[in-house]
Every structure is written in structure tokens, then in C-alpha cells.
Image 1: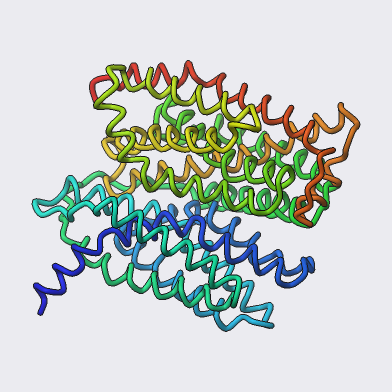
Image 2: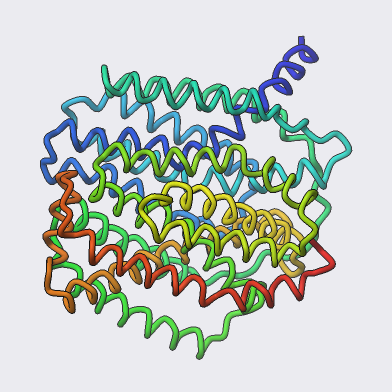
Length: 452
């Protein structure tokens, strides 16, 4: 019986790949519908906002003490199942809706880094690695799951929580086959400052809370005070770093590049969806997420083919790919193609950064990917602040539309061509900003040439 169960789990390894990546998107699909269902009454945006807040910042709290990654993975699945249950029971119950957003945010924020770590342990720390999922079956499962989510959402929002809970339960069943590795690593766990961890959590949490709330509810007047407050707190945090000089394990170049990757992913998730919703409506909003998910699913296969068939160094191939993606994003006609290509090469870069982080000395092997994801999340927070600062400056100088008007249009999912010009300018400025980091990418790959 044990052998047959083990074989069944090996055949279902496509479920962890889809669900650990899907937990970044499925709760957004569900919770955004919750806000729309309740006619955009202000409090009902809080479950979605709290999901974003906890998803991005929970790793800053987890780092305070050493916890086994496999245990974190199991915990994240159970928290996700709990969030699905509260979501199912939350109809007409605002408190349960808030709990749903919090629980799903914690689950999403922990699941991907924990699963990535456990997967790498399975690859490098055991003689019996878990077989890779069949790509065709993976794509079919993801497609059916995504279609079912949207189909059920159009009939019953609570039904989507049932579907999410069932698939998380399947994930828990399959994931138990991954606990076969033995770590032989005596590297001491870093002594992270509790105060610094709480500061990073609080700064990230309230920054995202204010930005997301203002954007969803149309309160653009909160933007400038928030940017000033963020700048002041960040200034004092930098003073703290220069004075205390904590022992960082990632060098400056890799730190910048990991933060850059976090900013780039957030640009796709936040700016591209924001832009397309105002330009073409809510269907275009969801399409950006779907394109990104497709890139995640088929990206590893395409990247492998590109590396085998194109006789270029990794850094050259990456820079060419990002350049093509950025150019496509400039033009409306090729925007979706740009989203796909940029997502694809962001995954390309993330693969190499993950490989680099896992080989990093000075951190326990079980903590290296977690540290990388924390830097990634810092990049996500920085991008949101930078994007809003550029958008605020562009609207202020152009005097064609206010940030509050843009946020109101976004909140009401209303197409308004008057907002397109400042968004196009902001988009081009952000893309130039990303291009400005190309020398850092080149420098990083030059240092790591023999490892990739």
C-alpha cells in the first residue's frame, strides 16, 4: 500500500509545480471578485489589500528564528487550506473575509520560497530525487484549473474557495514525497536583529497597505504623504545600516540584481495590469496575469531550448531577450507579446539567481533561498513606491489628469483614454530605469561565468 501511494505521488508531481506558482495569482482572482461582488464598498477591498501586505512581508518575520523549510512548506499549505475554509464560510461575514485575506497572504508568501528550497534539496541532497513533472500534463492541469476557477467564479464565489481548498489538499498529499533528503550542513544561522526584522515588516506592510488602498479606492491624495513618510523612514534605516553594518552574505552586485528581479516582476504584476485595465478594461487586466502564468509554466522548457540552440553567453542572451521584451512593451500593438517575453526572461534571470543563491556560502543551505526571496520582496516594495513617485511627478507636470482621477478610474474598472498619456510616459521612464541596470547584469554574469 505504501509503495502504491508513493508511486501515485510521483505521478502527481505536476500539482506542486502549478499550485505553488498559482498561489501567487489564484487568491488575487478570487479576492478581487469579492470586492466587485460587494459593489466596491470601501471595507471590502481590505481582504485583497491584506493578502498583498502579508504575502510580501511575512518572510521578514519568519527570518527571526531558524525554521526548517519543509515545515514551513507544510505550514503554508495548512494555512492556505484554513484560508479556503474561512473564505467558503465568509459570505456576508466581513471578519471571516479579512481572515481569508490574511491567511491566503501568509500561505502565498511562504509557499513559493519553501517549495523552491525543498525542490533544490531534492535535486542536490538526496540519491532518490523526485521526478520532474510532465510538462504537457502540467499545462493541461493548469489550463483546466484556471478555466474552472473563472467558470465557478461567475456562478458562486464561495465555490472558488472550495476548489482552491481541494487543490491545496492534493498539494499536501503529494508534497509528502519530498521529505527524503538529509542535510549535512553545520553553518550557523545568522543572528538577525528582531528590531530590524520588525521594522522591515512594518515598513513594507504599511507602504503596500497605503498604496493598494489608495489605488483601489481612488484616494490619490494619500500618495504624496506616503512617499514622504517612506523616504524619511528609509533614510533612517540606511543610517542604521551604515552604523551597525550587519553581516550580509550576498555581495552588493547580487543583492542589486535580486532586488532588480523583484522590481521587474512587480512591474509586470502591478504596472502592466494597471495600464491595461485603464486602456482596455478588466478582461485585459486578468489577461496579463494569465500570460505571466503561462510564461511560468512553459518558461523552463523554452529557456532550456534557447540555451541549447542559441550559441550565446547567458548574459548576452538575457540582455537581448529583456531588450526585445522592453521594446514590445512600449507599443500597444505588441504589449501582450512584451509581457510574455519580459516574463520569460525574468524567469531566465531568476533561475540563475536561484542557482547562485543556493550555492552561496556563509548561510545555512536551508536558509539561502529564503534570504533571496526576502531581497526579491524588497525589490517589489521599492518598485511600487518608485512607480507611484514617477506617476505622481508625470501627472503633476503634465497637468492633464490627477493621480486621484487615475485611481478612481482604476477602482471603478473604467476605461479612460485621458489617463493613457501619463501612463505611457511613466511606462517609458520605468523601462529606461530597468535598462540602466544592464551593466549590473553583465557584471554579475561575468563574475559567475563558470557557474552557469
